[in-house]
Image 1: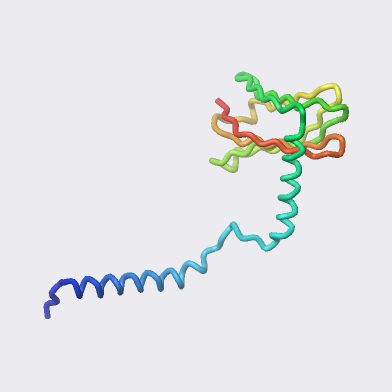
Image 2: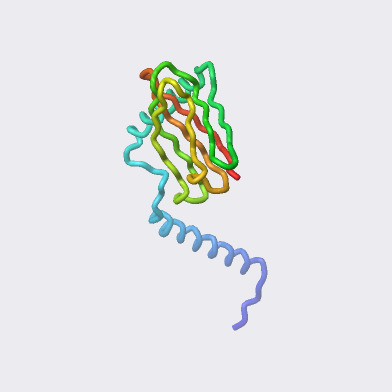
Length: 149
């Protein structure tokens, strides 16, 4: 028996295809794990409030951070001078590869306000530089996108 293809047959085939697609989504997509959902969302929200406060402390500083790339040796970062020692860490986050991420702790004495990132830690490409430090019982956070050649 030959079925003649006309508007009636096209509409019925479209509805059957659509219903099949909806059933497929309903049964197979709930099994997909999501990385955006957290079981500890309240604790993470409190931590995020700390980050907001650290960024606010940084924006209230009278002097800002200066980043000076030195092509043959690394990156020199001038942190605003403080009368106390500065403790913290920096992270170079590379979105293209987790293996190229770098996190190092540092201490800067009263006499110096320079943080140096050597060239050996850097590969050519784009990084997100995150510096978190504590000085005079206040915490600060600085973020900037940089490109290393």
